[in-house]
Length: 615
Ligand code: M6R
Image (cartoon, rainbow, N blue to C red; front, side):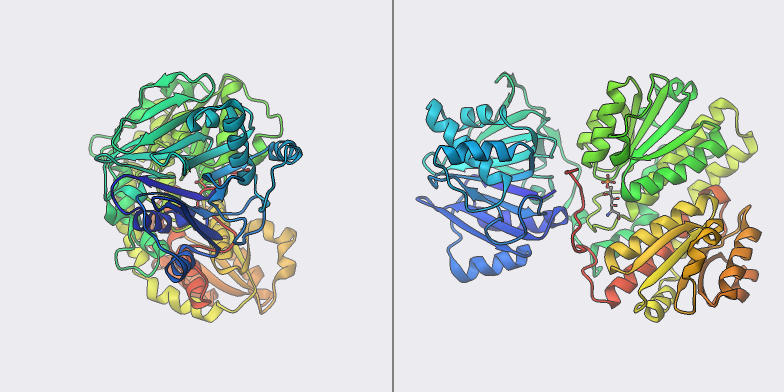
């Protein structure tokens, strides 16, 4: 959590850092701060609130000159969001200034020791402890900043991406990484530092992604120096050419990133299967899978680990894999899996799903599975992310940057990848007939146009949103492939509108949630053509008899549910296995419109952050 940005070069650092923080606000937005070196002093400005509040405070109060600086946008872990706990943090001497994304777990014992040695602290943060530990090492050992950082980091336990500089030697920024992402943009005689490449994409296409336990020193006009934190050995940095462009990280005329990302789905689903899905030839080509097919076909079972929306995509995959490829699947919350001493063997395949590729719990689950000998396959969106590097192999989703905190296009592209994997394995195993396989390949290719059709019902969904925007509770029901979609619909609504919503398997309703139903309760039921259609119709009757309000997602042309439901949201007819890719769309739009009507911050809902890099 938290976004970090830094700059050293000839340009004015302030606008680069400020814009960079705005782009990284998806990572945390409860407070922000910038430290600039103005040629003599560190000019520090920080505030509770968003980057726009920081911008205002800076322009009201102080100069923003200087070509060396660091900035931070925070998602609080240690210490409430307030001005004092905001980053950057100064050391006791006022010489060192640091920004940090992560958690120093043993900060309390280090703090105690530093207090005994006369250090004082103004904030409640672990970061202020770290900068003073570095200062203490620097003085005691009489070493340069880089060396002091290295010695200090060997004493800490936890996760970090840090950047700091020393005002007495203002020609370098020292950065280090363990468990939190850190990218270094390489310009002409200048360097950019950031949690991802978006803050510097208009300045350079060349970047280095530090690996865990690496640190680097960047100096204006000099070559970058990368070392291992543990043993100080020199590392030859790998410079990547970035594919990202500015357009991808801007709103492109939409009011919110979330809406833009919902509308991008026809395009990004196509991007995800482009070159991989060849229906006329009956081929699915997935580079990351080709050499490991036998791992899957010989596996005792597949275990899927993920969090949040990615976990819901995993649940959809459980249905698809078992149905088509006949491989047993278990889906686990990464946060539970990592701590429950699971039984994993070398005959298990673990699939880790993550949009960001940085989620701490998913990463820990991967490490555990690897230790136990399982083959681990990653499905990530962010290219070069930690999870994509930590897994044995994997497939990228190619959804492009997802900036809205509520995940939308990541979900449908994850399902697209998982469907392709399941189909490929089913074909190889012979668990699917050739005719069915060929049909599903063609149908998958048609999904983007069906998603587009579903998007075209937006104005109708907006009307439904206006009717229900003021209720306090929602129930979402689905069966089979659409049970996880019900969970996802409920998650979308609660995270951006703060309305309580629960997702349930439709048939499970009678075992408890039915008690909640009265004339106040809207129930969103996914009732598209499927094997369970008649059963879902019965569930709708049960709700109607108790006066619940039915909002049904139905297949175009449906008449039965249409007569029973109070409101309907139509999606094109699709083979059941592919329905989650279309039924999700109206649910995303419904939650979006309700949140907008309630004047909530759709892209940055309270208490959340886009990538959860702490446990
Ligand atoms: O980046 P990841 O896919 O690993 O993130 C997992 C969850 O944190 C994420 O899906 C979260 O639940 C979203 N806010 C849901 O919209």
